Length: 133
Image 1 (cartoon, one colour):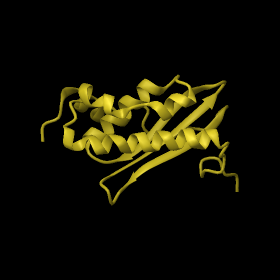
Image 2: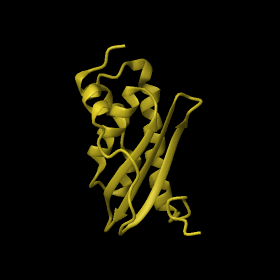
Image 3: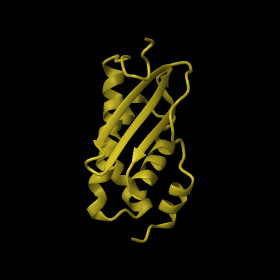
Image 4: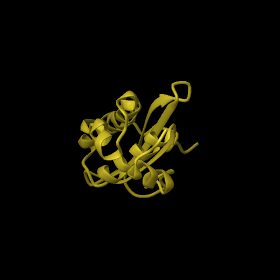
C-alpha cells in the first residue's frame, strides 16, 4: 500500500509519542482498540489550569494509525479537556489521505480520547500512571 507524504512524515518522526514524565497537573489516561483488533491506542493527557498542557500517545497499528495519533496530539495540545471528547478523528482522513476502509481505525483514537475526558470528569486518579504503591 502506498502512503501519503503526510503519513510518511508523521510515521518517520512521530510527534509526542511515548509517555509523559511526572510533572504538575493531573494525569489522565484513555485506551481504545486492542491488539486483536489490529490497532491499540493509549493517550495520556496532563491537565493543568483547565488546559491539556501535554499529550502523549502510544500505538500499535498501521502507519495510518501512527500518523493519526501524531497529528491528533499536535492538534489537541493546548485544548480544553472537553475538546478531547469532542475531537472528530475522521477529520484527519483528508490531510493524511486515509482510505475509507481504514476509518474505523481512526475511531479507536476517538475512544481513547473520550476515555481521557471521562477519567478527567470522574476525577479518576487511579490509573496505573498515578498509582503510588
